[in-house]
Length: 355
Image 1 (cartoon, rainbow, N blue to C red):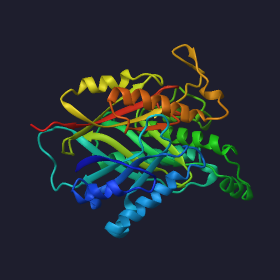
Image 2: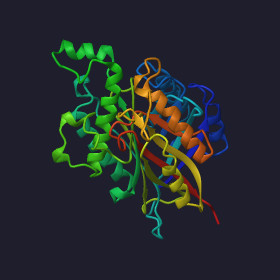
Image 3: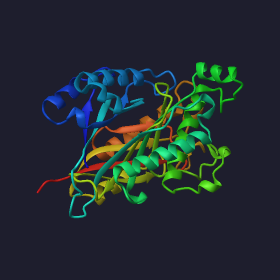
Image 4: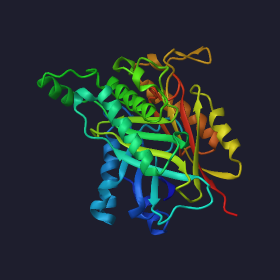
């Protein structure tokens, strides 16, 4: 396969004008698009309807160009562009090749999968962990990635609990993991991240129990990025990695931020690939559950006006925008089991410079 990414700025969740221009100038071929990863300017919380609005807009846009084939595209929208983060879309394309590339150089490879739909009582529990692990393994295989070490970012859009879903489960005599809809976002993100860690061998599945979800912070994935929303009831999985079965100028690498101000994690990636051009940054943001960053107290967890995930996105977005020199990057809040407590994965997609 040959995979590529194109970043598209947006003026609103319903703006596809720049996307249309990219298609007209040949930068994007609609039939090759397998996923669209976006940052929308809502609050990123339970009632952030900019995510669903953007998904609906994109579905209709692609339906007008490729018909029913638009349904196979994964639309993953992450709400919240606090601080300097710029709303945008990252359009991911994959073109099949008739034969395996020669030369042994590993290039960007993408795999996309969906889980089954979840019942409300399964969200944030081991049923979700297992289903995500299965989908991640399938996406890795689809991408032609032969070594888990070559997986550098796994983006997952997962569901959350709404009051209607909680009521429906209760009517059937089923208990949900929490009746706090906001907290359900964290449980869903955490279960999805642990599913990724399980699939990639980052944790011992035999030692994983349901009580670990959003409790055992020492169990995490270094490449998972999960985002919860009310616009779906399954998990959409996008695996980013490198493979000798892929070709093209793009490749990806990753690091782990130890805390919200660890810009050196990205700087090390940039220094490791001076010969390449940075194409996109993908990262997770989290407020340290200890209440401290570098031994200094923070108040993100105690702010009754602004959710801590919004604080974290603003901080990490600002740090990584400074290091990369570009605020049009993908930073998602809520990093339960995604990197060490208070930190999170950061990946950089590069484009090799042509001779």
